[in-house]
Each structure stands twice: as structure tokens, then as C-alpha cells.
Image (cartoon, rainbow, N blue to C red; front, side):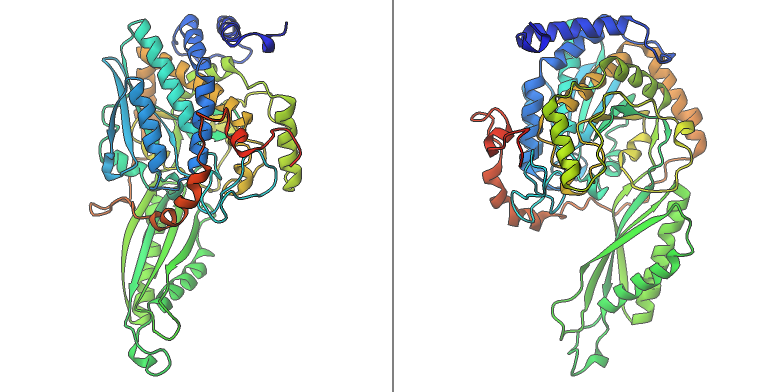
Length: 536
């Protein structure tokens, strides 16, 4: 009888024994030079995650079905906090003035470890899972175009497993779980830091979906960002009868856009900037007395971002002056540059190596290939090997790009990001292709492997004081020697909890019939009538 045909309980025991053997055998790569938890403890916590494999699948599918964008993750937050309370965590809701944010804590004494991942989904990216072509469930509704439905299930499973082992062996240590609310708006983690949520945290582990199983240390090449809303105020008038009596706020936003694009040519290659006009008037024959432009400014480090932001403010003032209007601004979000902690990353990488990649089925590989071929993506199989530890030397010099507000936590406490393999190579993020696998066995398997690596790294942290001290020393003496945390948040800046509210008021009633019901259906694909591995 093959291992795959064995009963689940025996299969879990076999997996635990294999992991224990792997942990006791010197790896082919150079091991981390840090003290670690015992192989027996790690095998035990990995088995505790394995026992939750079905729970992980249900959580991944459930959050996929909610499809909630930033600041509107109401059902998602309620769902996760309910699970955590059932497992003995103390939940505080509405932290940092954000209704869908929370902390869930457990433990006493020892190091405090923060565990988090993002939970928001993306506007306009509704998508049937397990289907290789773009096919919205609700046309225009939000959906998981970056796979944020899978991260907190991995974190929750890891935390529950670590808690069970820590209780069983009377290990001192504290766990604090938190969700990345509105990450796609880069809009909350700086407020978490400002509210002091991480003031007594010793180490932090964050996870994010990808097609690789990996981690990194050092400057990770993700730009710092400030999200700023500029509101211009003019004077209304009849646009044909008395235009000379009006002052157009829309003209001011247009002038700002033109001037910014002229200045962009003379900015460093590392900067990125983009904007939309969110309000531009009521109807054409009324001179717009109010118009709003929303800008994302990105740069490689704190000082460069501050300089770029001031250029934007100067151009906004000039646009107002030139059009006879006035302008006000407010910061809606902020993200610091990302910087991973070396001792924690090396410890996590040893655990990633021990856990290994998921076992992909023929159906998994077939579906991945169909997604790539159907959407004119580069065809590449699901990965069979873990990705080598990413270092400043292997990455080279970054030239700018995206942002992630985990950076604010990275500059507050020693932090790493673990990327777990729940998606297909070469899909386009912020597009429906990045959602197609995210409620399929590909997503479920990757989240379980990620949870194992997280849980094992938690045990390293709570059982080896030397690792905690090394992480803190690196944080202060190496990372802190390069630059200092300098967030562009004023005392009056508040989280943009109003964002996406009207969208969900319109779409939630249409989305609710698609919510996953695990009491009736084994998987979300079954509920939707999708045969995984079959042609679309």
C-alpha cells in the first residue's frame, strides 16, 4: 500500500517521522549558525500543523469566498477571531482605531513573537477558482487577486500548533497574531506601530503568498511609499454663462498631473509614482469647486521618500496657485522599505529546507499549465525545489518597484517574511490570473507547508535565547546603522477606514450567495460545481 493510500492519522505519523529524520540529518546546504529547537520538538509541531490540513483548506476557501477589500474585511475578521478565541487566544478587536484590525494573544513569560499576514482582497477581481480563464463570480466585485485569502490560515494553523506544543512541554513564550488590514492600500501597519502594538515584541514573522518557498534578509528592494490625497477647492459657476466667475478645482488636479509628469523625467530611476482622480465635479456645466487626486509616491529609502513627497507637495501648491484655488492634503497610508533580519531568516531557512515543497499532483501541474497557456503566460511547472536563501549579494542592487507596509514592523522589531508556495509561476498579480489557484489544492498545500515553517521557527525563538539576542543585535547594529525609521505620518493623520465602504455596500448583497458553506460542501470548488483537473 502506498503512503498516499494510508489513513490520515497514519499518514501524519509517517510525515512526522520523516521530518524528524530530515531534521536529524545534516542538510546539504550550510546550516544556520544559531541555536535551534530540538528536532523532536520541530517534528511534533509539524505534525500538529499536519493534523490541521483540513482546517487550513476550509479557512483558505472561506476567506476566498468573502472577497473583502481593504478596511471592509468584516466577515474575514469575525471569522478569524472566532477561530482564535475557540483555541484559547485572547482577542482585542478594533486596535489602532481600525474596525477590522485585531490582536490575538496567548502565553506568559519568555519571548513575545508576533505573527501576521494580509487579509484584504482587490477591487474588481472577482474570479471563479479552479477555472483557467477570466470568469468573475460577480462582475466588477472584489476578489483575491494577490492570494491574501491564504496567509492568515497558515499563520493561525502555525500558532495553534505552536501553542499546543508549548503547553505540552511547559515552554515559556507569548504569541500575538495580527491581520494585515488594507495592505493593498498600504494603509495600516504604520498605524499599528504608532499605536504601540509591537512595543513589547521580541521577534516577528510575516508570511506572503507566492510560487516559491523562500525567505530573505537585508534590504529587500521594496520601495518606501506614502499615500497622499490632495483636495483642491475652487468656486462654482455656470461653465458657459459665467466661467470667469468660477475657479476650477478640476483644472488644479490636471495642472498637478501635468507638472508631476514633467518633473518625473528628472527624478531618480528608483522612484515610482502613480495617481488617480477620485473626484472631479458633478456635471460639465458647473465649474468644479472640489476635486481630489490620490497619489502614491515611492522611493528606495526614508530620506529619498521624504524628498519626493515634498516635491509632490510643492507641485500641488503650485497647481493651486496657478488656478486660483486652494489645496489641502492628508496622508492615507505609509510603507517603510523592507529589511529582513539575518539571524531569523537563517533560522527560518533551515526550517523551510526541512519542510520542503508540497507534493504536487498531476492535476495540480495540469491546472497550472492550463492557467499559463490560456492566459498567454510563460509556461513553467509548479516548483519542485525550495528557493535558496535570498541575501543582498544574491539579489544585487534594486532599482525600485513595489511596496509592502510590513516594512514598518521590520523597522520596529526584528522581522522576516516567509514566502510560501500557494500560487502558480508567472501569474500576474493584481489580475484574475493570480486568483485562479487560490482556492484549489495548490493553495491549500502551500499554506500547510508555510505553516510548518512558521511554527518551527516560533519554537526556535521561544527555546533559544541566543537567537533572540542575535536578532536584536543585528537589528540595532547592522540594520539600524544604515538608516532610521522615519514615517511620514502627522499627528492628525488617521487610517482611511472610509475607503471601499460604498463598494461593499453595493456588492456585498450580490457576493453573499457565493459564500462558502463548509457544513454542506467539502471544498469551495465542490460548492461551485467545479471539477478540479477537468477542462474548463
